[in-house]
Length: 123
Image (cartoon, rainbow, N blue to C red):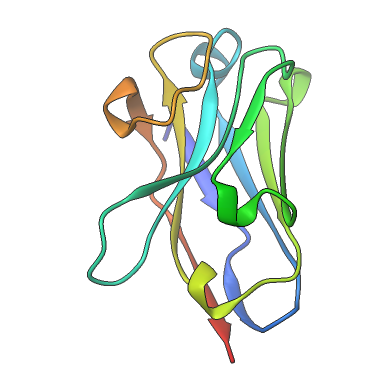
C-alpha cells in the first residue's frame, strides 16, 4: 500500500476531525500532495494541496477558513485538520500524490491515490 488514509467518521455539525495519510517514502519525499473528496452522486473535487516542502498551500474556497493541510516529511505523513464541519463536507476523502513537486487542483495531475476515508457530518 502506497497511500493509506484514515481518521474519518461520523460527527455533528461544528465538530472537528483530523485525517491522516501515511505514504511510502518513495512517493512522498519530492511530491506535491493533496486531499480530494467525493460526495455521493458528485464528482471528485479538490479540497487542499501542499507542495513538497510545505511552502505553497491552496484550498477550495469553501474550506479555506476551516481546514488546514500539513505534512511531516520525515514521517511521510499528510494531514487535514477539519474544523467547524458542515453537512456539505460529507464525502469520501482521498489523499493523493502528485506527479510533480507542486500540488495542482486537477485530479489528473495525481497518479497515486489512497483508498479513501468516509467523513459524515450530520445536521
